[in-house]
Image (cartoon, rainbow, N blue to C red; front, side, top):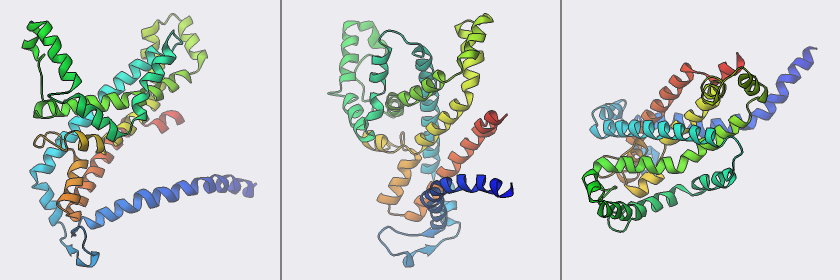
Length: 306
């Protein structure tokens, strides 16, 4: 009996071991190394032996750096709006297309196409579409404004979407929503279709309408999956770089200079790897705190185990 119990633990451990090794080598070790480097002044291209130990000086510098504070604020705003709108739209589309309706399969296929496009291509597409002189979006906005002159009072004219500080971040948010809402849609739709049919039928027999069934039956049962999906998107948005790099490169000014781009500039332009590691540690810390807060509020593992 004792041997069989040990065997039940050993066999799963053998299968999990490769994933644990990859996690340690690919994630934990680099994080520890970045934390260690953050205490040094180490210029890119120089040997490690030339690194100068600074203690907490890099962290003191970071606390006094207005650029870092601005990047944190921009990153939080960017993350909040993208994840909020994407979750709402993804869940709404999944609920709308849950039932087999005419043309739903075609719409689903078209809807997930943005996921198949690489971030660099997405950045180039939207950069050209939003161009102040030749962009198709500005063309139609201007055409509508000329056709209905009254709408010109509401901004229906050409805009430099990526050149105006108040418009650049919303343009990036719209781009991210276009690309990643299908990701939410696919996951939530799969979850809805996996819900037990017996529970849905019981709620219908008890007289629940579509809205009541959605709010009090489907979404509560889907909550663990929604929380996991939200965490995935938060983590992904915090490390977003390619699209922002292509479209604005953090400009105009500091209006779209998210933390990941700040790290890139510090490491590869200023070539200060020690200070870039400090900002990386801050980015990891913010992501960890937000993720932990969401998990403490509603832990999917606890919900499933209860």
